[in-house]
Length: 298
Length: 183
Image 1: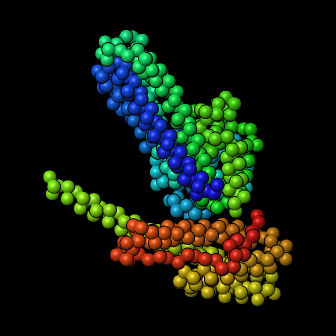
Image 2: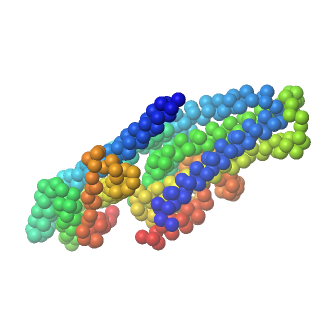
């Protein structure tokens, strides 16, 4: 597959997963209304509201928030003209505006991009990645990060986080009501027992399903960013060999906050501790294989 | 009731027309912007050349024919205006620069000089920027030309005064690769 079909496939799958999220929200609401009766309907906008407020703030201020959370320091062109030269190359290839650039003092090679839109984008690199990579590899990494900016992945992950959050809050409220028996008086649908059991199962399992969907979306956006990076540089070998460097390297960035794990180019969480389904990134070997397939087309 | 439906349909049709028209105009502007970017990068490269030639001259005085080739190519490149002319001059200049760098290979003192190394470095990134701006331009031309030729946008192309644009073609397949610069 070339990068165009890769891009199209990953976009299609993202849409499929987002539709899955919407269906899940609908299922949870339906289950809640079945189990507790329509008198609980008022809870739905409250849950969605709480999730929206909490996620929207971090989406709007993504660039500033992530700087504080990762300890990244903004730099100017005079601080590292070579890095800026490389970034400008990819900027020209992508037609994006110039992002803010930051450095994280950390010997583990890694990088990330954030910002609510291309005009407020920020890309950051650890000192480790700048030391470990040559020109072509670094260009591949920059292209991958700018691909996240071009594909608006901060927005996509904010939407995924909002829906997953709303589902978690809803399910949490419902299970609490169940234990305290408060909602039972609303059970006025003369109880089809099978329907009630199914509703209960949905309420309990929905948050888990939401997290799985959120992780799946994150993985698809990583694959999409790889394909878009190749669209920018037309050089799959650069990104491929950069990923090989990351694969060989066993160090991980110091801060392991799960809340920002998804934004790095290589997941900072220990691969063994997090199972495949919950992972925010596709396995690095799989990403290398896809890029190798693109190389063989050139 | 009927009038509302009729007005609604008319409004939808008008909105559709506006969307097609705007899409063509937007694509055309993108091509213009991409072209401006190529010119910026070619100018950057042209500005770099006198310094590069001077620094090589300091060590290799007897390579006059190579210097002349670069200077002539640079003059042609800065005076060209149509897409095809600029592309041809760009190709020639790339060729001439390759010759200049090959000459430099024979002078170890020159290759070791800090000034030459930094110029070589800057030339490498500029060559990349030229190549990427060329690629970005061609991608935009492809989108525009597709829109001008395909339904429904093709019906509006004449009205929006948007026509197919010329690709930036580098003739010599060898010219597609920037001069090999190692550092």
